[in-house]
Figure (tube, rainbow, N blue to C red):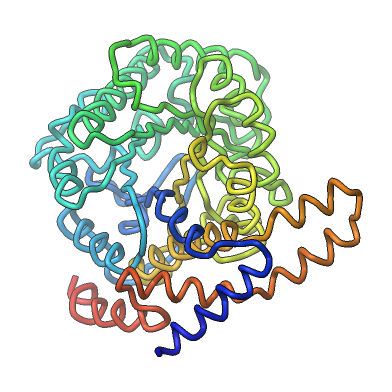
Length: 416
């Protein structure tokens, strides 16, 4: 009997004594896909020739090996995915279009500019998610896109939004999987504005124009993402939590909660069950902000565990789409993917293994001492043994996965 098997058998017994079926938990984990962000591999630069980010975000660091084109990016994603167990999707931004060397502006993007991505996804039986890109563009330099007072600028971005929905629909038709199409606009002011209302009214009008187009598959799931502030846009964000949540709620769209887009002491785990009292579905952008929306690689910390707990405890697995959103240019980018996605999977597995019924029963009985005591005892249950067996069954390396990444770094990344 292997060391993994002995540890797993012990873990099964421990969990079974608390009423938890370990096998069912692992089966449930295999029904929860994670949407993995392509932009970790190239520091959110895309293929339009831009050399820096704008729109209130920044990727810091200059670790060697950044993907310089679509072929390199897909190669790196394949390597990362070979070390990440369970179901996955790939999340694309519009600026990752492949236009054959021709200049195609964002208001003219079409499904054909993403056909290589579709063929790649089909070969791997992956779904694709999408995001229109309202940043790092000359028509966004003034700080406004859909809320711009310039009618021409506004019309450009409205058309970009419409094309993004067409592209998302083409993904659904080709891959026969839902496509979440997420709208995040960085519009805002660096200093205190005189008029807070007019930009928001223009943004609502622009979004209504985008979503007026009918005939798309019901599996195109449009989402609206809010933000507290961005770099250079510290005093006023048009697409605030209140505006985007209100818009999503009133227009039947998904609302996107990004873990880095609120005050550092304001956690999205607390918002999931509140929003789902009213929204049919949510999109989560799981990130890790350190003092600001810094998009650090997610670690298995308390907030990540709470996010997973809220999804599982509420039975929201079918109502919540989970996507990751971080980008660290200071470390090996493939390792960043593997660390973050594995941690998201670990948090979900840990939540699925939680003896939640015992906690809930203590709470219903008003025994808050038992609730606290049991919750703390459950922290030391042998979750790691179950995770290791999950990896073994997926033919995935456990702790030594970094050796593969280092070899790939030496043989591939350092030659770029």
